[in-house]
Image (cartoon, rainbow, N blue to C red):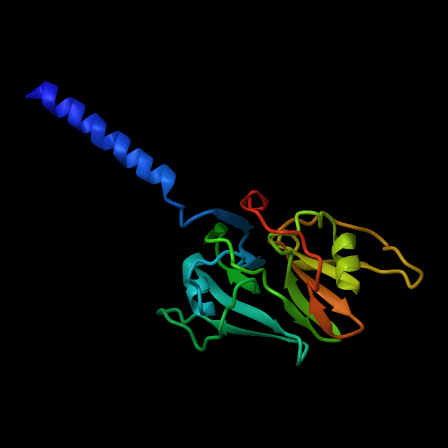
Length: 211
């Protein structure tokens, strides 16, 4: 009996492994955000089923979740009740950049399918929040992002100091400083003109661009 069971189990195991290898995986990438107590910026680059800010807030144990309204040039958000639940809510589309507040350090993993199409940001004159797209691993510095966007300033939030840090474009070209960027980074950019970003000529996305 044992001689029969062992080959049968091996056959079933090989069959299961073959099925795993041949079927496409639903989870093809992730982007990790390390969070400190206080405010942090995150984004939702992967398609993982989040539709509302409260769902993201619950996932990371946040006390507040905010997004930037470029029309009013103000941060708008929701706050968690001490007994559970939220005082309001707003939609979170793929690629949404968020400013979140937490009582304790932790991590947020955006895990799921690669988006069928990368998000496009409708920028208004003034400040706008964007995320470095998953297919733009070439944008390794804030100056490169600023040139691509046509921005006059690029800012990122330093959770260690709880302050926004920025670079500014010179009127004659170039930037006064720089900082490193990578895919999935949420950034606050200032533009003189309205437009859409990214526009055209974006490299094709591949799963190796996720981290």
